[in-house]
Image (cartoon, rainbow, N blue to C red):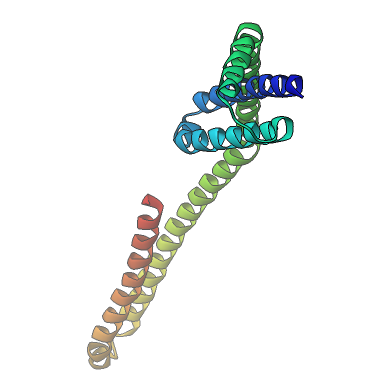
Amino acid sequence: MQFAYVAGMCVCAWLMGACFDVYNTITGSSRWLRWLRPVLDIAFWTVSAVFVFYVTFRTNQGEVRLYTYALLLAGYGLYAMTVHRRVVASAFAVVRFWKAVFRWTARVVNFTVIRPVGWTLRLSWLLLRQCYRLLCRVEDGLFWALGFWMRLFAFPFRPLWSRVRPVWEKGVQRWEGIWIWASNVLLQRTKQ
């Protein structure tokens, strides 16, 4: 029974050392995970304590003595002398691998999704601006032609035109005001 207890404590120390090295390497390599480090530290030590007490309960009927800590310290020392460097090197290799996978995935998404969508939106915006300018010129030409023909044929109706003209000019101003307002709204939204 005592051999199982000693072996259990040594295995617990080995596992705690390996888990801590892997967890420490992963959280240290990412600046996003560094913010979570205090919470993850508490979770790690809580899970480790529960695991050690569970092994103690299974192998020594839950009796925690001073030599329990000495066995944990000896098990961790044995871990540190034998496989610590390999575990840390393996953790760094895993981190480098996942960073490379993430970078490659980000590049693929950038080239296959983000850039084509950006080019499509830019082209669409350019075409819409050109269409808007063309329609503004067509509108100006239509209003000029309509005003020209109304002036040409309005000579006999001069008294009537003097009454209709202010209403016509207000209508033209409101029409142009609507389009100026719409273009300002579009320009403000694109600047955001």
